[in-house]
Each structure stands twice: as structure tokens, then as C-alpha cells.
Image (cartoon, rainbow, N blue to C red; front, side):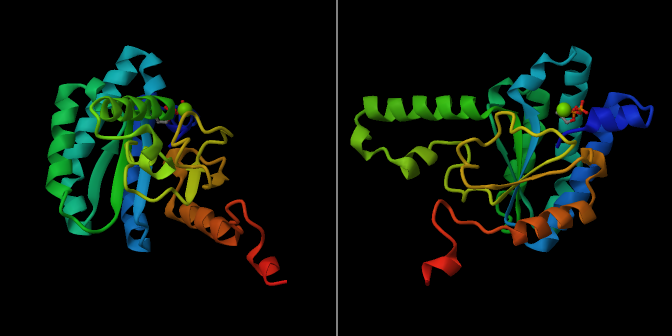
Length: 229
Ligand code: IPE
Ligand code: MG
């Protein structure tokens, strides 16, 4: 979800107003995605690198996070959405974590779409944390090194037991992945748009999905049409 700040600047507003507008857009798109039948929607809300922003902006983002967790509960229950988080939550301030935990707990029995927020998330960090967990299992004699394969490794990531993403969307015209789901996106289709996050509407999401539907995914194989020849 990139471009809140630039959207605000273009509107002669404060950056934080861009973040507020961005949070509103999460509500719109979560409802839409859940109506479309999307199973898992993961949103990159705060990266490990975002701490380097001015303290005032970081503080406001954490407050926004807390408010978001409180405000969206009702809607999650109404839409049968299950909220989850990935990332290293230990550094998220307790006042925000408390409300996040409450919403996660409250929605944990919902069976509809999983809305997953990546918070204090970095893909390399996630892989290092996974490796530490694996090493501890090996040291404790519960796992043999030769038992570690790709599936087993993935079980130690924050996204354990989830399917890999089919489509990765980045808004605001940046053409990079910025330490996001590096392992999981090995075969994801990428979609980049110039739209800033607050203006990435339902129509824009449909455009992304339609572009995705036209792609031919071969997963390293050859065209399915050609395999018959
Ligand atoms: C993305 O918007 C949202 C967060 C990282 C919280 P930015 O804040 O990165 O907006 P730009 O990139 O400055 O426009
Ligand atoms: Mg940005």
C-alpha cells in the first residue's frame, strides 16, 4: 500500500491525512475483496524499515493502527473476515498490540477471507526468525537436518500453512518488492500501477485481477497447450 504521502502532498494535505485516507481505503477494498471471494488478502502496512521515518509520523501510524483494530471489528464480524498479522510484533507498542490481539482473537473463528496485516515486517527478518526456530528444533532433537525441505521450511515462516500468493500488487509507481514476501512470491504474478494507495479503488483492483486472469502461469514448465503437441 504505497503512496499515501504523495497522495496527500498532491492534495496539499498533511502526510498523516494520506495515511487516514489510506486506512479508509483498506476498509473499502477489504469488503470488496471478501465479496469477490478472495481467500487471503495480505497488506503491507508497516515495514521493518519504516521505523526510520520521523518519530511523529511513526507515532501517528501506531495510533492509527490501534484505532483501525478497534473500528474494524464490527465489520470483520459482519463480513466473516478473520484478521491476522505477520511480522515481528514484539516491537509494536503495547497499546496497539493489545487492540490488535483482541481483534485477532475475536475474529479467529470467522471462516471467510483472511485479512492479514504485515506489521514490522521484513522478508529477510522473517526468514532469519524461521531459521532460528528450525535450529532450535534441531538442537532439541525434534527435527533432523535431512527432514528440512521447502515445505518444512515454509511451515516456520509467519505465513505457515498458507498457500503462496497468486498476485502481488504495488501501488504508486514504484517498481520494486521492498523486502516483501520474498519466499512466498517465488511464482506470484506482479502488477504495478501508478495509482497512489488512497486512489486504488475497487475498479482498479478489478483491473489488476483482469490483468492477472490474462497471464499464463507456467511455474517453470511449458505452455499447457504445447504439452499436448
Ligand atoms: C504507504 O505510504 C503507507 C505506509 C508505509 C504506512 P507512504 O507513507 O510510503 O507514502 P509515500 O511513499 O511517501 O508517498
Ligand atoms: Mg512509500
